[in-house]
Image 1 (cartoon, rainbow, N blue to C red):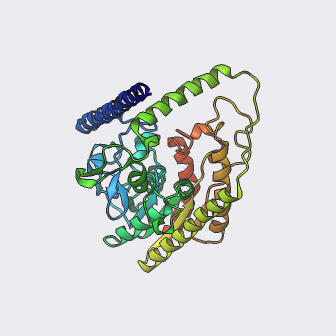
Image 2: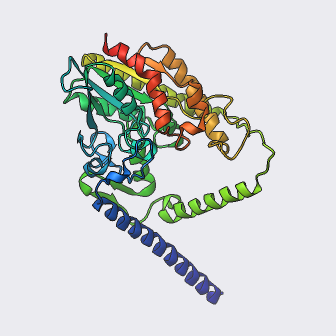
Length: 396
């Protein structure tokens, strides 16, 4: 019996050592990879309008607003390298001629679909909706638009509120635009965000604290424990899951035939609906807070309820290999229920503009880089949908 126990413990020790070695090797490899990428400057041959550009993003802890990019990220990115920026935002000037008749200062808030750095990854050089919107507006008049883009990947409306207040302490704006909706799903996904004391917290910071056990801060400082407290989020596990996903995807393609199948319908539980309603309630209060803060600072405010793929009930009724959300029935059910409440709240406010029912932007896969992020063409459509409203507000 003792011999068997010793053999068992010996094997456990060997297995643990192998896992630790793999985890350590993966982290060292990532560190070296990041250092190599950090040393590279912006290459002119990567600048292709509308073409996605691989972008290494380094979201870090920011004591004021939760998470932010590092200054080095703005310096290297083709969309921001020649702009003025801080850790929170990048400022770009849009004007047709050297002479201008009037000037408007605009603050932009949002998540990864607005983020000036992540926009490079999803929609390429000058492919964000912000670029398309103000490029087109400025070309048709003699005004000057100073646009402060504080969009940041992973932001909820709570994070936008923190950025808004922070920016108001040092700037004045004629208009504040918050482009949001889809990231409120994080209040459903992350149980730590459902704690009311964490309503204003960053989803990424909470994941770092409770799951990864790592918080990387601005200035290159890192607060960490040797290995993730949740092994399901270790690099070893994530790599294994990526391999599994790739194999399953290939198997699914091999087993597919010419016969289309109806997408599986997912019925939400009562608890799921309650949490989603709670998420929508947070969004409603946050846009009210942002509206009130903007009025107090004599700025106009516009909340835009963003569209996203799959909101249309006719989306992906027939599964085929080109349908991005064909295997995401739970996600589709949850995002549709969340938006049913967001739309109702938006319709009751004159400062909320709902474009989430746009047919193309909720149905057409070709307008998206992935299931959540529009490509340059998708962002052009977003800009087309909101241009008239923005011009109207600025001319008031």
